[in-house]
Image: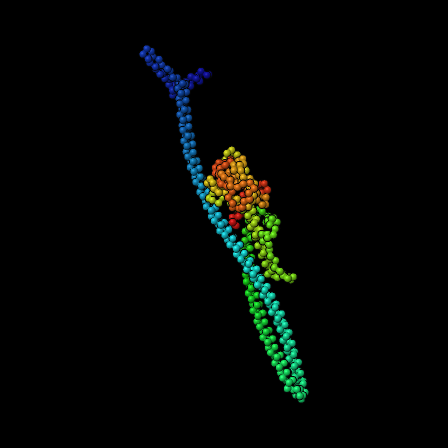
Amino acid sequence: MRTRLGAKLHIVLERYFPERRVFLKSDTDTRFIRLRPGTQLIAYAGGALLVAWAIVATAIILMDSIGSGNFREQAKRDQNNYQARLNELSSQRDSRATEAVAAQNRFNAALAQISVMQSELLDSETRRRELETGIEVIQSTLRGTMKDREAARSKLADAQEQLNGGAGTALASAGAGASMGFVAEALAKTAAERDQVILDSQDALLAADEMAQQISVMKEQNDAIFRQLEDAMTVSVAPLDKMFRAAGMPTDRIIEQVRRGYSGQGGPLTPLSFSTRGQEPTADTLRANRLLDQMDRLNLYRIAAQKAPFANPVKDAFRFTSKFGPRRDPKTGGRRMHKGVDFAAANGTPLYATADGVVTHSGWSSGYGRLVKIQHEFGIETRYAHMSKLRVKVGQRVSRGQRIGDMGASGRVTGVHLHYEVRVGGKAVNPMIYIKAANDVF
């Protein structure tokens, strides 16, 4: 069975691969190599497989080359898009910075106007009280004049009665001429006093009307000043209140803490209380005291804003290279928590404190490189890492906007940048909360 199958297969192979002989001839001998059909089939199959492998390998190489070219082009396009996006963000940041400077100027102008209006209000209140005192004096004089006029009228009536009742007797007596002269002189004097009293009362009434008009004008002026002050307070206090709330800082507690810190003589702003001389306070007095309370709150807000990191540590041109939150470690490739934000700029770019505080660390720290830590009020701490140069010392008190160092690439980094952290109660929070909250105010 196997022999017949092999014979049939040999016959089929001989039809396509007939037996061939390859002669090898030398000077002395001639030999040949017989290529049987099976051997030719194996050689043919091996050659076909080799050609097929070469074709497939070439196709793979070509496809990989084309694909890598597309990937490079895609990566280049992505890089260009990313660069364009970064440029756009940088321009937006610059425009926001310009708007913040303009807002700060408007804010300072509003505060200056508030100070002027406050002085005008106090001067107007003092003048109004002086006018009220003058009117009281005039009214007292008028009442006395009216009493004198009534007394003069009574004397005149008595004299006339005496003259009418005793005219006959006086004429019959020997001293009639002297009595009539005395009576006439008394009547003339009384009439003159009456006329003078009438003139004085008319002058007093005119003066009272004039003062009443002045008081009415002053009340209108005071009302206009009150309205301007109230509008200015609304414009000034509302953005600050919104800024603190956006940063998650309870305003009432913050204000109370600042007030306790400035409770010594002088204070940030002690509200005035207009005297009412034991009487019930007027509507203007209550309104003025409410405004002074708001001014005190505004001043406390300004003090608190200087002590919280509502500012940007980099004022020159920069770009954000890493945000707060989980990210891929550029060195290990693993995932880890990024506890701050990164600002990239040129080496040596000035770095500034974002709030008033005390330097608690200024030196080398593992991973952070050259590091500055500043402790602020309200349990807030800021950190500035990877510096090339430190410009403050431990224990030094710094103000917001004071230069504390230069940007660099010290520590565990892949390039020049600033790693900026904000910690509240020792826990890292997103610094952009404070930076964005202050965009519309500073």
